[in-house]
Amino acid sequence: MKTSLFTLMLSLSLILQLSSCEKNSRNVIQNYYDKAEFNGSVLVVNNGKTICDTTLGLSNIEKNIKLDKTTPFYIASLSKPFTAVSIMLLQQKGLLDYDDKASKYIDLPAYARNVSIRQLLTHTSGIRDYESIIHKKGLTNQEVLRWLSGESKLQFPSGSTFEYSNSGFIILSLIIEKISQQSYGTFLSEHIFVPLGMKNTWVYEFSSAHQNRAKGYNKEKQPDDYSILTTGDGGIYSTPGDLYLFDQALRNFRLINKSNTDLMYTPATLSDGKTSSYGFGWFIDESEDGKSVSHTGGLSGFRAIFWRDLKHNSCIIALTNQGDAFPVGNFLKDMKRTLE
Image (tube, rainbow, N blue to C red; front, side):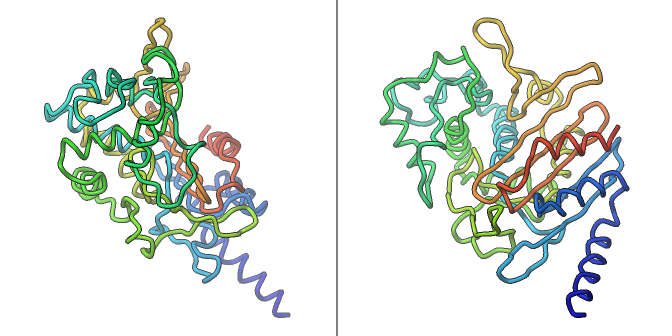
């Protein structure tokens, strides 16, 4: 009897949580939840209308704490658009140029001294990515920089190839700090988070470990929480609602002007004349129906997707704290079908 009552209460709870979603999107999210492939928050906007804004599951399994719309998740590489916008804000103030050498602002090893800020933004720098090589709790930007100093050369001539590099965005974070004389977290808070009203978004520090936030888990629901201190490539906790405020600010030129916005969504041109599919902090997809941009993020027990249809003012944002259970690509494909 107790089991039946519990099952009924759980079903009612799920219905209430999903009641703000239109039927098609509700069915998709429910299906992933039922298969134990999604535990998190989703926001879907179609042609400027919110069709789904919901949470499912727990933010802390051990304490049985439910997720709500104000629970921040670690967004991993979704931090990169924020880093790119921060660099663009500095450019708009005349404090840097995209074709400046990064070594103008911070000390870099000799082999990287001609790498430009533009090449860092577009992942065409040739600077080796640290992420699959260094595994250390509490890892900092300075430790990554010291590791780069131990490397002997670029992976390829700068500007010739697209190759994703978290290291490059760490260098951008250090440039932001050097020019602004503020920490990365303080700069983003003062210039983006606070002006846009992103009240549940912040940059992680050890001191914020006990803030209201989702704890990370793997698909077996074992703890797999976030524990490093690099910024620029990651470091941010946020919610779908706050990310939507960022989306709208970019569409309405509240942060960066139109020429920079156009540049942000323009694929990088490589030295052989070909183009990549990445601009300033966004992957870019162009089709007959218009242009969309997106970014995913994933580290430890967290996965994230932020997809934005620029023509139709539509977006899909999904954040989960049960990382390796979540098939990001399949979920996005299924959710995009609900917008058709």
